[in-house]
Image (cartoon, rainbow, N blue to C red; front, side):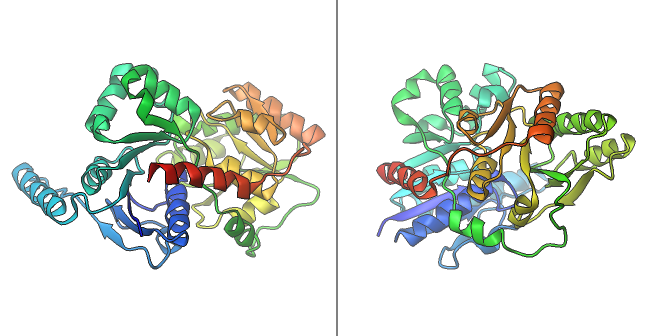
Length: 359
């Protein structure tokens, strides 16, 4: 039985965390001995982890006393090395931004992977030195492989680190289709409105990435043209209050509803007519897969892997308020009929094969 270690920051709400839970549980089901290491053992997805998967917390000291902090963290590093060095057949730093997860993964196995969930050149506004610094901090060259969840992420990485070409692959996130369908049946207070179109957006409220101001501006314009619809926003984040204030200023409280974090967003997908993604950048958007599974059309900006939506699942737009407005208007007037069935079994089988090749 192969021993697998997966390292991340936490299991709070987010696409990375959701993908990690699905991967850990899937590997456990297939007979692998999975261990999870978290920088902070917290988050709404903790209870979703298979009970047979042990969770280790590796929390660095945050003491304001610099000397105390450095000594404490050095002791913790030495302790982890002595206990876990090369004790696993495979390890992965699944939360790329976590230096702790990177250290844990490099230590736990000689067969280690660094998982990338974004197009980092876009994330860092095409500042190559910033991207270089980010990956050097993770000691990227010490990982046996670097895995990206999108082709765009891989290509931007190789522009800066061409020497990693033979060690860098693309592997999309797994999805637990059966669980999504079952969870979507949960009863919620909000009901489907037969005579009113409902749009939904699920994700972190972070303007730099998600650009929900595009959605708010498009909504204002459509309301001025007397279109009737509602928008459900599920999520939280650093710009949550900013978005709430903006909605109040534009007098859109009767159209845009903030529902906060939801451990189970799928019943809300079920009552929606269309999913809207207004982001400036994404890795491989988990919301694509969730929409495919629940047979909901998508309006999305041209983020990573948007071509999959173009092939019969929705409307792809440029990254602007005007483009979002036009796409929503088109949906309100003509709707959108999904042209193809998503084969989740085939999708997952192909991904598992890739991951097992890494093992």
